[in-house]
Length: 279
Ligand SMILES: [Fe+2]
Image (tube, rainbow, N blue to C red; front, side, top):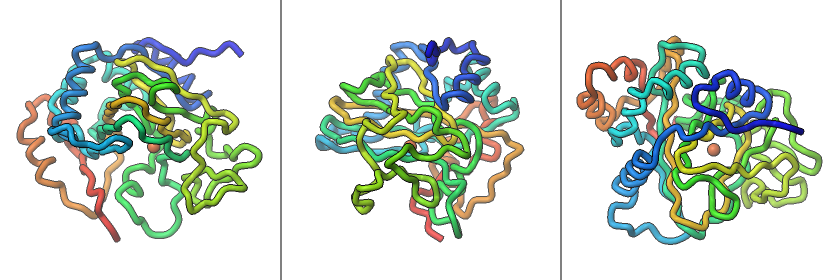
């Protein structure tokens, strides 16, 4: 099949069509090499300032935009924001959440999952149950080393972004549709963690590209063979008002104090996250 999954930043129609059809795509060279290096330096500064993160491990920052001023430069990038507006279908948007991930060589492949918590049953148990329940794209990630199956990066399950998608033969989902298991595996070991599942596509991208995937798309981080840097920011329409059970943390208040006036509208409705929140 002749398909295109790589787009220029201005090709809103192509990007939206690919997300609707395949559940993912790559936007070429959204940021330049200087910005890539700047984000990597910021991730080092925040997550591993003394370079002591051991091999085969990972570390997350779950509110990256609160500490990384450079993320806010993206808001001044009209071409970047025009795509975000087009994907959300609204110009009146605020920061929803942001993240950075640092992984070191030797980290094995993760388990197949969807970030979407909209089918979680019973009372909310985690901050993600409040934040990851909308239909706008789940990932708008800068894989700052690029993504490649031989080095590290992300793999997605094509066509897995629709509500009625079911796991390929020999596999099944948990009842909340967050994880994929092979029928004969021990589920206590976590969701399935190999690339040989039908529909799996190891995404190949360059540093500076942005990898987009839909709200429901199943994905996995591939085995990491280098020091790997990733970051992202997500926005949501302000018409979605969130009522979260945690208070805005001091880091978010400091960010709001620091930001120039022109960026403040993007903080209206921002909730930050309390990853340790429990009911
Ligand atoms: Fe994920």
